[in-house]
Image (cartoon, rainbow, N blue to C red; front, top):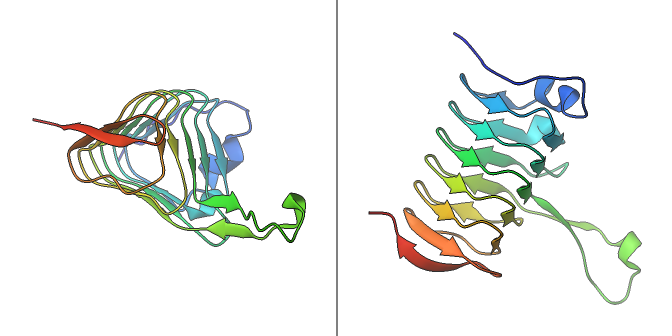
Length: 153
């Protein structure tokens, strides 16, 4: 089996080597950044473009399905800061929730996917969108926050 991964000596080398899973024919561009990569599970035939950040939490995971494309500059995280007013921001506990991205999904350039989001198979997230809620299968979403604007046909 052949696995295609673009590797250069950048900050993603450790992340790629320690992924929870990486399917065959997956292409991760050299400038991608992977945090807590043991909690990142990537399917086969996935393309992760330049300057993508995939940041799993220490206790949460990110799963990316087969045949998915992640556009340049996108940010996917399963970990966020707490925001209680009785503590300094720097002292807040993290809010970790798994992120599941289905198969045959297209995340446009600079899309942001926040903790706890599930994106259904075949969905499209428009460039620059901020996804704060689940996205149904074959839906097209856009905006800040992302809202459904159509369906793939």
